[in-house]
Amino acid sequence: MLSIQPAAAHHAFAANYDMDNVGTVEGIVEEVVWANPHVHYYIQVMGEEGTTELWDGEAANLSILASRGWERNTIRVGDAIRVTGALGRDGIRRIQMRQVVRADGSPLVQQPATE
Image 1 (cartoon, rainbow, N blue to C red):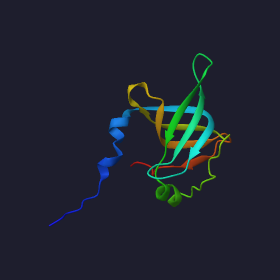
Image 2 (cartoon, rainbow, N blue to C red):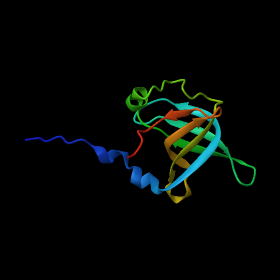
Image 3 (cartoon, helix red, strand yellow):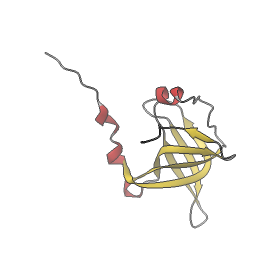
Image 4 (cartoon, one colour):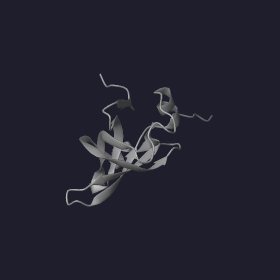
């Protein structure tokens, strides 16, 4: 008998992100990868020494984003955004996108509020 169980562990967020280390990055979207298993927004962020750093903002999958009203052009190349979320482990420049705010201050719902 074959038993199939949901594969919740395939995301390996705990391996890629320090869920206790929440930070914020702000910059200009350089590239959008609108595809499953997760949408990615590559963001040019001004570093402390005045140089730019490319950050990988990992969002939810297409179905979840669509259920929250996101479309392919919700965030476009050239948009200024501020992202808050769990930071990448081992100093890797990536962030699990939990909250996104546009340059005009309008928030985009990425994940449901935690209770």
